[in-house]
Length: 143
Image 1 (cartoon, helix red, strand yellow):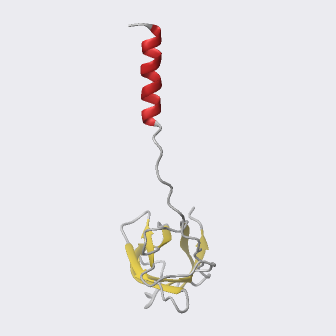
Image 2 (image 1 turned 60 degrees about the vertical axis):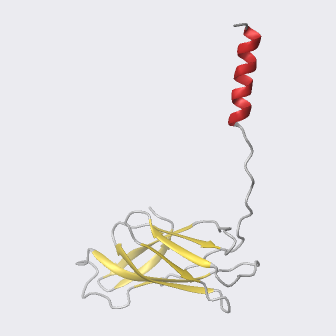
Image 3 (image 1 turned 120 degrees about the vertical axis):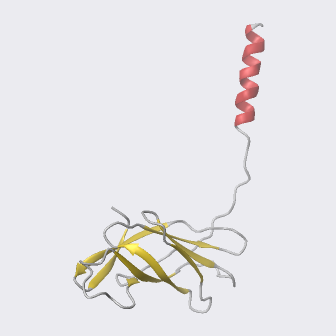
């Protein structure tokens, strides 16, 4: 086999591996969660004693792009197995996702919005920090 044939074979392999993929437009809305955005509906006697706690996550979706009926907010615990979704209230652009079972000392919540046509927002990451025996606050990011 000649050097030219080998070079053409390599070039053909590289060209086939670099196939173009159709770009999907992003969903242009953000996710905002206040410092009390993760709450415990019925707090245990002490968060220090609780291994897992059921929480609700509340927030808003600021942005210029209009929300459509059927727009969903997804919340997933990357360090556990909690995963919930809820439809966003179009009139107020706020959301509430109830009933996530998380471990307070070891969790990372990933949130994103999905439009009815499949477009997704950027991902937002938050976690709850124990402030005292009965209070938690929401922190941006996951450490």
